[in-house]
Image (cartoon, rainbow, N blue to C red; front, side):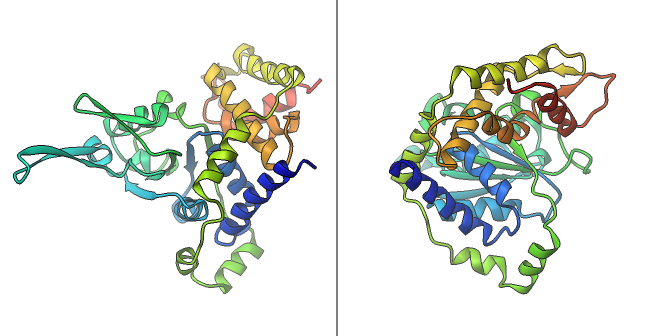
Length: 311
């Protein structure tokens, strides 16, 4: 095995192991979150309250040594509460910009679907461009910049469903779900996760994370792998079960995440299994069934993967 590739895998494994010490039995979900970060994307976690969404975000920030802020989205939250505002200071006789919580490397947008669409859209430029515009001045955000948004299921009361344009900004959507009985017992018998979180130490330095992201972008994808991805994408656009197929941005997101997944498994090339591993998390929230075919997104994704052969 190539030494640099093996070293990258060890770094990723160290982060996953550290976070898994708090979020027990959820290694697959942690690895998907890491792949999303290494692909320079943004993550949406949809689940019931109390499943560990906030714990995952906080533990990743600590394990990766990233600056962290949490924004609690409520119905009265305003865009300025996220981005920041200029305040007149009498001492200097000038307006001074006070940055909002968006100016962190890892931002937890908690319960994003409990605020109004106007405030939800305040994240759009930040997530897409890595910058915000305040009073006609463009301000760059820190690098890396990673948004983890959480939302309650759409059936919960007091929610504002994210529009398709906002959903498409999220590279992945995952659910954490209930732990298995053995993992839950270890959690109940162990120390308070909040105390464990305070003791976490970074496994990766800032420059190492940047190198990991650069390495992920350079993982090779052969023509055969790209052909397979195109067949998956074309299936979602041509079959009558789908009202909305996968967009070009969605296809690129699948490939970027597959590259990161391959690197995390000590390979410098993508194989079809990498595409399959990330496809549900990347495509699930982008696919929409036709109005006369009521299917959950998970079933739609499974249908695509089963219908399209690798060769």
